[in-house]
Length: 114
Image (cartoon, rainbow, N blue to C red; front, side):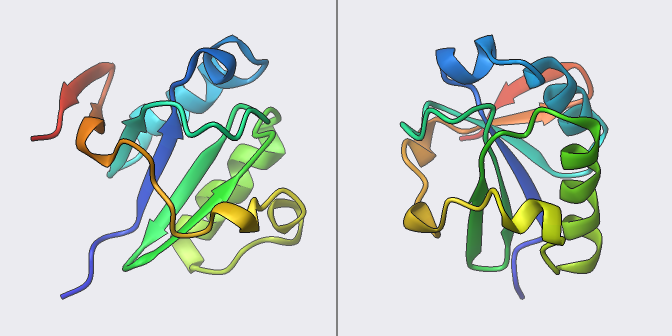
């Protein structure tokens, strides 16, 4: 059985300080399966990943409502919308730093995943 589709949001200090981070976290709180990760050292924030099965794809500059909408569309369909594909960080595909420090985003609460 494959893993469910999951949204992963980088919570490094640069991503947290970037425009659109709060809205991205609001989206994560509304998502059925969302995790917060430590800094991924991509620094083109805010950044988020979609994990579907064993595939993990990172996207940078998730600042606008249309970019967040594209993330939701990808989670629903499994296809990368054109607008989102321009922001994929292919160099870091299937990489997740600090996976032992992931935290589940559940509503407005963040809980450790252990």
